[in-house]
Image (tube, rainbow, N blue to C red; front, side):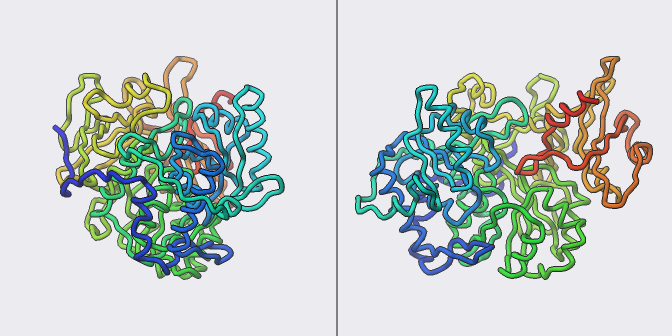
Length: 528
């Protein structure tokens, strides 16, 4: 059976992304669109709209044409959306680049995406120029490296915006033309360019509206990276479409994060599990007035129900809302509505409008499962990506001939339509024929008062059997032992789920979106 959203279907939004987001900017002209959380500098909606138009004109004059790919390599700044929407107005596709990338990784993304332009910031120029030099040596030079701020020898966005050239009017087909080309996290396999069309991104905003819609002037804190689809969607596209004020921080620092909530009277926060963990457990939280918060929404990786409840209690909120999605889904399929305070604790919410879900049996039969049965989550809707750039076979493996996207995530839908995500298909540990979900053990470990963080992977022993191993970060001052950890878990799970070994580490490796980088733990396990 297929589960369908309870919300009325939407008509696909056939607008270029910059029009879908900023088309109503005139109605919010004097409202601050973006505020620098450190300096206090702000940009109004009228200024943002004008800046994107003049930047588009400057990019077009510089030679950017429809179909070109522009690499946007920058931390969160209030100028980031000027670069992003300016490039799409010029007809370009924007490939967003991690602010933590190396020159080697950047060169790989430039090469794979066929980017001809780089927009960056002056502190990132050494990496950008090294990557560009690598491409030049291969005979595929970058046309120009531009900067969002200022740097000798490089034109800035302000220089481009000073042009008297007319605003370009490229003919954009929202259903076919790619607006954004973010790269998948690469936690399994090599990173791949995800082709998100103007229509898929714009439609996904409309799909989310009935479940979550911020209002004019509502203050949202943006600390998750804009280069990631979660940040791009939840912290730029959707709030700017609604006239909200986005307060921007370049990176997560707990004290700065808390101070900004207090001083800017932040009403909404979007986080990943590591931030939720800090909000629940770190003593610094009690030093700040966070009473302005109306909601916290956590996504990008699983959040344990007990941890979410502890976080909500500490912040005086009815719940910590969760959502579900992935880059390949533009990114949202499920969100817990703000008014739904009676939902099950560990749900990631309900299907957004115009979205279908099947739960497919894991035994290879392809059978559709019903409520309460765990299987692979398979989605269909207008938010499904166009495909992986230059990788047709991998696209075909992800999206079947009927348009269903196979996520590789395991979960179930309850009788009331709430989705629960259990784990990843590829993350499951097979111990003596039993399936063990790392996320379940990680959630249990985090309930221990002397464990600050934890991750679990399967490690194959000399006998060829895979066994759960826990990587544990002790709380400050703790002298927790391996035996204490294994006994704590063994007392609360079935015998086949027991943790068989423990390794203490200073920090759990995670992506900027908060996903555990299990490949790094597997590499660590091979060194033991």
